[in-house]
Structures are given as structure tokens and as C-alpha cells.
Length: 160
Image (cartoon, rainbow, N blue to C red; front, side):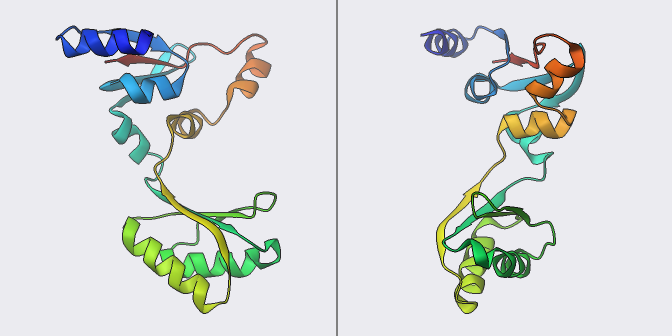
């Protein structure tokens, strides 16, 4: 109901300043976002501009066989032209930044097929604002609470 009310106000020409720690809410409602860390604005922009600061789009590949992760990482690196492939063994997940989404998807499928590596899932995705916050501050909520000795402070202000 709150999201609907904010959208209605903005649609009618009213400027709304909304402070939230729920980054999905910020992503859905904001035209402009200011990320605040320890009482200081550390970044400002649209959700897309902030997401682009974390390296932009990524391709995620979940392999059927965890034993093929090393081979899959090499194939993904060749397909995307990067050495910045991250691996999550527990989830059988490979992830890499991409510049051209469709070319990366096409080349990844070809490279995996050529190596006989089966993917359970392949997805192109933009970074979330949670990932943006972590990238900008280098810490998550748990780390902030431990360091500050209390609950996490507000993380960003959102103007919709």
C-alpha cells in the first residue's frame, strides 16, 4: 500500500523523499538514489547508473556437474573475454561480467557445448542494489552491526 501511495504521489507531480534500508524498494520507487554510509553520501545517481558502477551486467551459469567447474570457468572466460570469472562451488555457479549481453550468452552456450559441459541454468542479470551497496562500502549488514556495536544504520536515501 505504501508503494502504491508513493507512486500515486509521484505520478501527480509531487516530489517524495523516502529514506529506506530496503534496496528493492529503492530500486522500484526511485528516480534518483543517494547511498549514505556512516552519515555521509558516498554515491548518487539513478539505479542504472549505480549498478553500472559495479561492473555492469553479468552472466551466471549453473553447471549440472560440480566436477566440471574448472573446465566451465575456463570456457566462460574464453567466451566472455575476461579472467574475472567467480566460482561458487556449493551452488555449482560460475559468474562473469559481460559487455555485450547477447554475444556473451551465445558464445557461452557455444563454448560449454564444445567442451561437453552441461548447464542446468544460464542467466543474464544486472547487479542488484544490494550488490551495489556492498561494492561501494565493502561491507554487509552483519559486518556493520559488529563494527558499530549496534543495529545497522540507514543505508540510503531515495528520492522518487
